Every structure is written in C-alpha cells, then in structure tokens.
Amino acid sequence: MFFTPGTHKDHGLPHNPFKAIVAPRPIGWISTISKDGKINLGPYSFFNAISETPPIVGFSASPGPNGEKDSLINARDTGCFVVNIVSKAQIDGMNASSAALPHGQSEFDYAGLEPIASNGIAAPRVKDAPCQLECEIWKILELPPAPNGASNHWVMGLVTGIHIDDRYIVDGKLDVALYNPVSRLGYKDYAMVENLFELERPKS
Ligand SMILES: Cc1cc2nc3c(=O)[nH]c(=O)nc-3n(C[C@H](O)[C@H](O)[C@H](O)COP(=O)(O)O)c2cc1C
Image (spheres, rainbow, N blue to C red):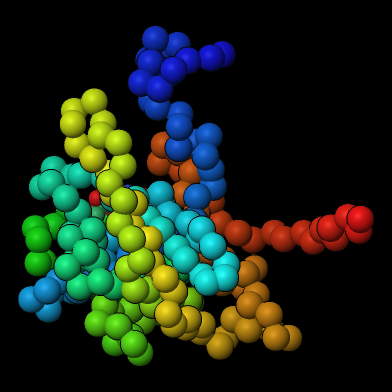
C-alpha cells in the first residue's frame, strides 16, 4: 500500500494510521503556569528528547477547539515548562488531564493530582510522577499550516533540572522496568515498558 498524507480513506483506512506508524511515542506530561499564576497540565505524545548534551526536549501543540493550547500559551508567556513522566500509576490522571478545560482552569484539580513547586522555574511539577524535567524555553517554531490554515508549534526546552524518585534507582541505574513508563501508540492504544533486553554495540 502507498498513499499520500490525507488520502488514507481512499485506501480502506477509515482512521489515519500515522500515529500507529510512529509508535511508541513517549508522553510528555507538560505542566506550566500562566502569566497570572494559574497552573496547567496536559499530555503531549508528539514529544521527545532531541539532544543529550545539552539535554533538550520538545513537544508539538496543535490548535484545539479553543484555539492555541494552554501549554503552548503558558510556556511562551513564562519561558518554562516541566515534563512529567507518566508511569503505570499515572495513567488515569494523565488521561483525565487531557480534558479541554477553559483557559485558567487547573487540570491538577480536575484530575485530582497534587502539584509541587519546581527548584528553579515557576512551572509546577506533578508530585507523584517518577521523574520530572524542569525546562527553560530554548525556541518555539511555527510548523507548516494544516489544510484548514491552523499551525502547530514545536516547543523546545533546555532541561535545567532533573528530579528522580529515589525508589526507582537500583544499583546506580534508573530502573525503567520498575516504574513502567507509558507510551502512546495509534488510535486509542497505549503501551507500557515492562520487558527489557540489552544489546552490546558492535566494536569496530
Ligand atoms: C496521550 C495523549 C497525547 C496527546 N498528545 C498531544 C500532542 O502531541 N499535541 C497536542 O496538541 N495535543 C495532544 N493531546 C491532546 C491534549 O492533551 C489536549 O488537547 C489537552 O486539552 C491540552 O491541554 P492544554 O490546553 O491544557 O495544554 C494528547 C492527548 C493525549 C491523551
């Protein structure tokens, strides 16, 4: 099968398979604060680490029914955001926090999640998330518009602080199989990291 973007329905695919192709995608659970001090939280799976040294992460916000997403507006206005990592224990909270609430209404309250202060930035963290990355905005890129004219934005942040729940450190390593990070696939599907294997890289 071959098709060009936007023509999947002509090929017997009622739902766009793009997100099932680029899968799994880690979930950046983005917490921010507005310029008038209201806290906000939402999951983003067009998200990844894009550089190790210095550590840089990015997420892509597409316009919703109310226009630009609060995470984008707040990150741009205040220059910072936190990436909270979603583990098995946070699945329901993460999903609840994706509700399209009016600007200024906190998804922390809505989803019953506890915010805690960050060390070096104004945006709060999700208390029970196994890891949290404090980020300062490096650049925000406007991406090419969709056919309806709406633009996505790619928000990149320099990681300036790293929090890890010490319970998940085993023999000096962060034990991924212990905290079970959750990833987004296509359609309504998710996957969880439970089984690991190691590979040695070839020696040249
Ligand atoms: C698992 C998951 C991943 C999501 N990924 C994205 C994404 O990458 N980009 C996006 O614009 N919306 C994404 N959404 C939808 C947003 O979370 C949703 O629009 C939310 O209301 C945005 O919140 P905010 O306006 O408070 O930032 C995702 C939702 C879920 C449940």
